[in-house]
Structures are given as C-alpha cells and as structure tokens.
Image (cartoon, rainbow over all chains, first blue to last red; front, side, top):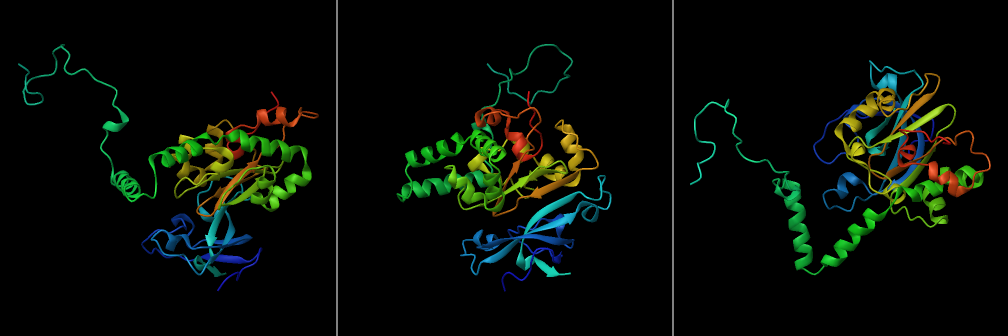
Amino acid sequence: MSGNFAPGDTVQVISTHPPGHRRTPYYIRGKTGEIERVCGDFANPEELAYGFDGLPKKTLYRVRFKQTHVWSDYAGPESDTVDVDIYEHWLLPA
Amino acid sequence: MAEERGTHDHDHDHDHDHDLTFQPNIEDSEAGRYELMTYAIRELLMEKGHLTPDELRAAQEKVESLQHSDGAKVIAKAWTDVDFKNRLLDDGNAALAEVGVDAGAAKMTVVENTDDVQNVVVCTLCSCYPRAVLGMPPDWYRSKSYRSRVVIEPRQVLSEFGTNVPDDMTVRVHDSLADLRYLVIPRRPEGTDGWSEDQLAAIVTRDTMVGVANPTAS
C-alpha cells in the first residue's frame, strides 16, 4: 500500500481522532486538497515515537489546500494555500 | 528575629519594603515532567557508558554553532546560478551537499518566492526548522502564537513582521510536520545586478529564508 496517489489527484484527509503521537494536525482533518508532490517513503513517525521500527515505510505527500476551504472565514484571496505534509494512511481518494 | 513571612494579618497600605525581589535563575523554576525525564535519560546514558559528558557538550556546541549564514550562501549561489537553483528546487539535500552542507535525514524542500507567490514556513505541531542551513530557530518561530496564527491569518501575521503582500499575490503557507524541512528562496531584490555572491549573501537574513520578510538591496 504505497504510492497510490499522483500529483494532481484530489484527496480527502481522514477525519479521525485517534490518541497518540499523530503527525496530521487537527485543522486539516476532513479537508479536501490536491497532491502537490510525492515526497518519498519514510518510516512512520507515529510508530517511531513509541520505539517501534516504523516499518513498512509510508509514502509521504505534500497536499495543497485552499485556505478559503480550510477556514470558512479566511480573510485572504481565493488563491492562498496551505501545503501540508501528510502520510498516505491519512488520505482517501476524493 | 525574623518575622514569619506571609502569616501576619495587616493592611498593605504602609510604605516599607517587604522582600527584595531578585531576578529568578532559570534553574530555580521547578523542572517539568519532560525535563525530569530528559535528566533521567541523560544520567542513565552516562551511567551505562553510552554517552560521555564531553560528547554531549560537543553535540550541543555543534547544534548551536550552526548559522543562518550557511543558508544565505546557498541562496546567493541560487540567485547567480540558475542551474544550481533548479537542482536545489528539485532535490534540496543533493544540491546542499554540493556546497558542503549536510542536511541530515530530513528531506530539504526548497520553495521559491516569485512575483506571484510569497512562501512562508511554520510547524504547527512543534518547531520543525531547517537547522542545518538556518541554525537554531528564533523564539517567535516556536511560539504558540506564531504557530497557530500564521496558518489561519498569514497575511495579518506577515504584516506584523512588516511584510505586506498584495492581494494579487498568492500566500503559500508550508506546514512542516515530520520529515520535511523547508527553505525559502527569497526574491532577488532589484538593484543587485552585478553583485558578488558575498554581497548578495549579506542581505539574505534568517527571516527572509523562513518567508516572513523579503530582502532589500540597501
């Protein structure tokens, strides 16, 4: 289960709130964005944090979100974005 | 004989001094849970012979000696050598290695400010920062205020840094969360034609490489 998305794909961040050392910030959970680039495969930091080996590695993506989508009262222009690095297991096709 | 402090009952409208106040020593504040855990682990590592006090000191010294001037040299080179700039944008770690900067295990992601885009970097979860090229992060970068606000109202935060971004430009916030570290290539300012790399590096400040400021020729 690696490298399932390509640049330009639309993805949705899973909206879930498991306990633990999670690297996906709350504000972006449930939001829809576009894969900006594939960053490579990395040992899963959510496992490494507890002394596990973090394997199998997870594919990391940079996902671009429109600020006006992320914040309903965003004050800037439509073109503003926030780019967030997100691991594949947090993403669904959208 | 000293009066027992804090137990007497009286009005505070009199004018004699109570205690002198001293600036607290940083060691005086009570150690938090994580600080205590850090001390415990450090002592265990030393007791078991995995780490010597000198190794710890040297590691600290090395981290704290990293300077943003390394980043500034990289930017100056990128401004004067478009092929280098493209390699930097394509594979930050490899391009940094060419100029003798070891970016470590993190993936250096280099983004470029243009006439249309202002990039700004944050780590909303902690304080991920490209220490290999910029040294230690400034206090404001680690503050909760910057970390929460720059992602919600980046234009407002940038203006508080003195950087006003016109509405026809895109502000692109980069939230650096685990394995990526970001370096911003600022826009090369006008009036710097013919400058040497050293002259250019001198105007590339730390904040311009985080994206909260833009360099100027003066």
